[in-house]
Length: 403
Image (cartoon, rainbow, N blue to C red; front, side, top):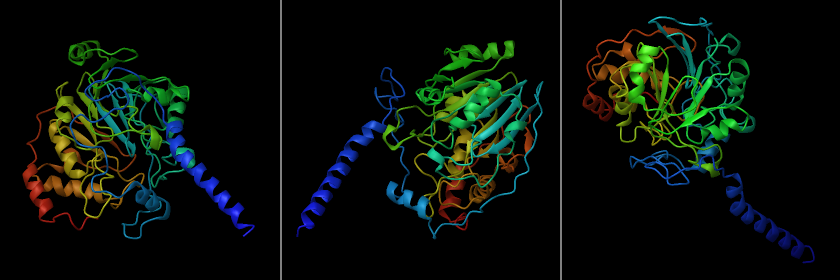
């Protein structure tokens, strides 16, 4: 009895401390990355998707269960390889004239070389995608060694999730190349926390190479063609944002259009489909010659074909169609395990859906990490995919064997 009272008192203090921690820590970990007037996608404190769809993992597990699956594994999901053989390539210093060369580095990192300009999207060379050395680890090495990268002129950072915003890589790029880094509102504060400067824009705003102010994207179109300069427009997509659990949606997520003399480049970032109207908004800025579109990390429950914040192959086809069916590269698969589908399910399903839709699979075909591809010049768009037929194939279970 003499020992019971101190034990109960100690337990009570532990409960009090835990309650205080639950109350205080979220506010302590919260960050205000952006201050500005309210808008159609900003309520004065947090950003949101204006198309009415939520930003959660549709039909997915609870956050606690998801974390437990990541920490302790899930014996019911397909097995991923521990590592995948990659033959890194060495890109040229520049690609001049009307040519365009694209190299998939892995996940959402793509090197685009065109019109004498070198562009990197969401550059990640770290071994893990997470804070303090935690998070998913690579199963595939980068397709280009960092030391073999040509001098980078422009970096696009879509949002602040760790598998897309790698501060260590951004520091290396700053120290070596001093590129222009363009992102969306609030992310400049995160990037700036390690002393790296960036230009942060709202959806619909545009910046020229080397500039630090927004311009009207439509007025710049002829200047880009005449002056042979690039312009970057931050465009809408459908996602969410957080570095900590408590700072959710304090910064904006986005896709991008890079206007170039011989055809525009589109980078979708990380996205769900939402209302599906935003790809046409990007295409309205001018003909898209090349698009990088995510196809993976869409399945968090058995049979799931998309989530609120990640498109799968079916949603990727809708995005591709909305962009005008440009030459496209499927990204966001096969590098970091973020969901329960097998590593090669996204590209296999995409190929099967393209065939079901009556479309040419070569226009939106997966490539191996590190293999350079030459993008054809702008030309007539191929016929639209038959999305109703794809839906019929889905309902008929044509892709059920692909786990």
